[in-house]
Image (tube, rainbow, N blue to C red; front, side):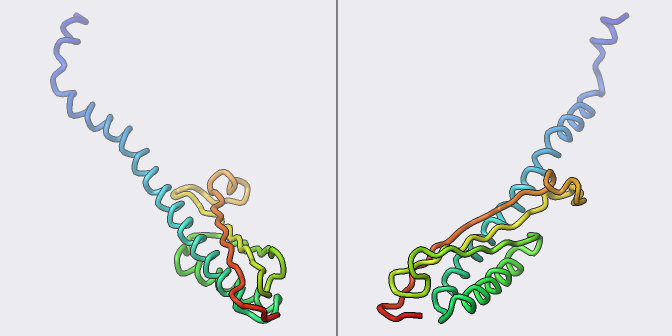
Length: 146
């Protein structure tokens, strides 16, 4: 009786194909969506750090430079990756920051939520990831103190 039931396997091929496709397709689609969100945020933080570093070295005083560069980074992030949350912008100077021979390193970090996952405060660290980039820009001024 069992042998006959096993031999008569008619009509189950379509069902097996659909079940197998769902089992394989859903994780692949989710991986593509997740990698797309992460890559988009990575491009956004790279651009924001680069723009902020360029703006920083063109200013006259460190307080004005950090304020304008921070604003530049935030505007760049909101234009390129509106889904990115809680941006952090930090500055570090090597040598005299706004004088000849100095350089500034700008680091931008954002939290990117993975798609279709809840963003409750208690689980946010498991359902999102931090993406960061830094850019260093040397001061283009020759012998001019700022």
